[in-house]
Image (tube, rainbow, N blue to C red; front, side, top):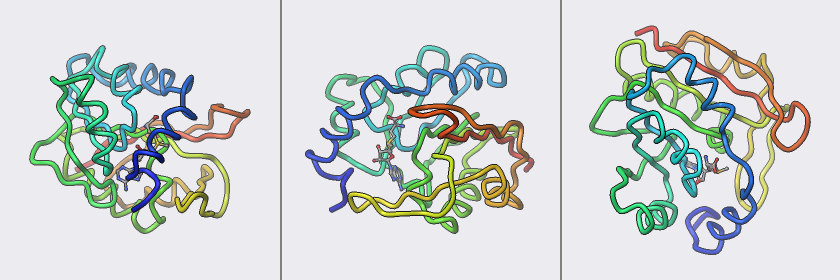
Length: 189
Ligand SMILES: C[S@@+](CC[C@H](N)C(=O)[O-])C[C@H]1O[C@@H](n2cnc3c(N)ncnc32)[C@H](O)[C@@H]1O
């Protein structure tokens, strides 16, 4: 079982991630997404961003780890949660937006493209997708987890011909200056 599928890994990640959230990503999203829209979060982890998104949108949380989902459900029994692997996301509904924060870098570059193609099919007309990554080149494995890094160029390449147009693609700072990159996409299908 992988890091995020064990109680120990989930506990360790939750502690490590304390104090970090996607508030500025969600604030930026607010300029493009109408309040009350439906949002699917991929890789919600402890649910910090899901709570922020829920202030403005109708949210569905998801993760490929049942451990994260069970933990969140125990403190939010009313939450709409689904077990979804971002590699091939399937949900029996469509959404106005799909959001992830530092999740898709765990996919290979081929899986990332496949995920975007599948996400497009989960979106309503003119739907949006917003994703963040660690900025950089190459890839590595840490604690059994794959980390694939993206620059402005390699991220644009990964998105090409997936049925999305780029609304915004820019670097930002999370732990160190300019260590991260985000993209806001609009479905062209
Ligand atoms: C770095 S955490 C980010 C969690 C959350 N977005 C946050 O900001 O705290 C990565 C999350 O992505 C999930 N994840 C990793 N690979 C995934 C995949 N293939 N499908 C769905 N979730 C995945 C992990 O279980 C974990 O919850």
